[in-house]
Image (cartoon, rainbow, N blue to C red; front, side, top):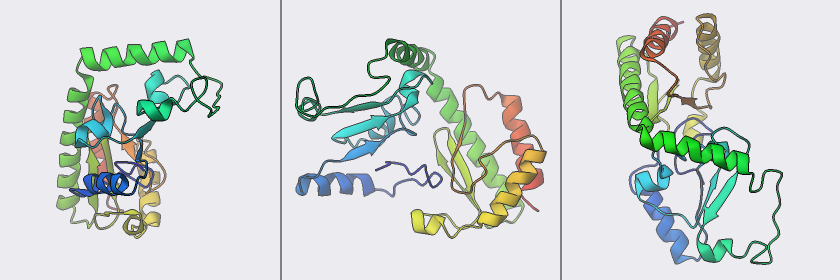
Length: 221
């Protein structure tokens, strides 16, 4: 499971939800696997599991752990990982398994993130951006929802969704028309209502301000 939904747009877990899932899986002997391809090294250096204080049995990570180089990682409890060859009987192979270039790039990326406190600065920008977007939506009198966490954000064209089904009720056609207007204004957003926006350390204050101005001009059709 994604600890924070990202592949339907960012939907945060309700208070106690992840803890409840952890208890249920432990009670029934079920493995809890967190898909942190999106949240890993973004919510915190320890991912969503460190941010929320809920430790899964296994975790999957994508190219973020290679600093953008192609690689994927599965981590978890020692007893589980020792079932994989050559230690155990589960065979697994991949083109970039143990790639020294990808792993070195990932380590260098983590050194920068930690040494320069990148996430602290980036997440503060995310908080400010979401607050500004909420003000814009309110000033325009739109019934939209600004959602997100850390450096993740999105405007749902509808009520604040708490799950996949509620997200599907949002105005898909309205969002796509908005996407086209933003593209004409020079801001390239994900074209689907059900994709997530991400801030990067490369986004300067000028870029953020220009983006907010484009939102202000283009949210109302």
